[in-house]
Length: 356
Image (cartoon, rainbow, N blue to C red):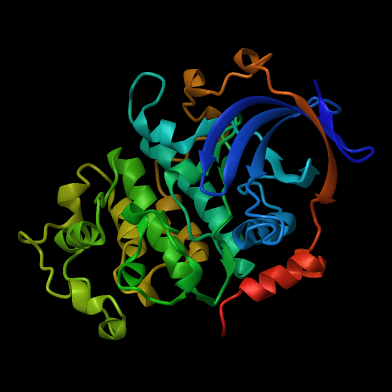
């Protein structure tokens, strides 16, 4: 039996649960009016008085205002039975699946990786040019469309910059945390995203995480073993410096060529500029797009030719008739809406913002 509220609006049928996180549940859904397949994120409401979590408000504010081919397309936010749903385009493939294997269990080619990284830097450049940080980049937050277009998703931790990182909580999965966050820096900028981009670039090259670790200390040790002591001007003033300052390389520091065997000089030069310990010296997304890596052979793969493993695609057909009821929703924020003008939600966001 269908549940509905409001008057005319968007009619959706929930097809399949995709996953559950701290802030809600994600569903595969079909718009019964347009037949479009979308992803609906059901947002947890903490209580009638608390309202929507500030992190969800932040994600809505960013998604409403973004328009770029490498950013997941925002469709709208809807209310049903007192629950908020965020609708975005359905993107069927995960970057993590590409990292693990191609169709024949083969690693991505150098040309494939170049195609992915150009799109990655393009999306990051768009964010940074608009004074936005993603702050939670990782392969799980990067999807690929059937036509090979990379999409950055999950903007729950995104923010304007310059930014105070004290509100980040568990943002940036530990394997991808830059040195400044490992030392507890409060003021962060685009260099944060660029370090993470370097870690993901390395993961594409190696088919494994670059700095795996269960604790901050293990990650710091991994960084130190590859890049040397984790020091740069001013780092000794950061709150976490004393805790990790005595971590030294366990062996003689090898050149990057020893870890990344068989990759071109331009590849390693770009990587080294991304995983530079000193955040002030990391390459920007705009400069990364101009790096010689993108100007030399091999030519990058055309996006539509990326080796997408069709067996990893979320099946829509098998998701039908799963017992989920249809819902009729009323739009609360359409694409292009500025939440800076959204009354009550703006007040909640301002109240939740850290003191300057």
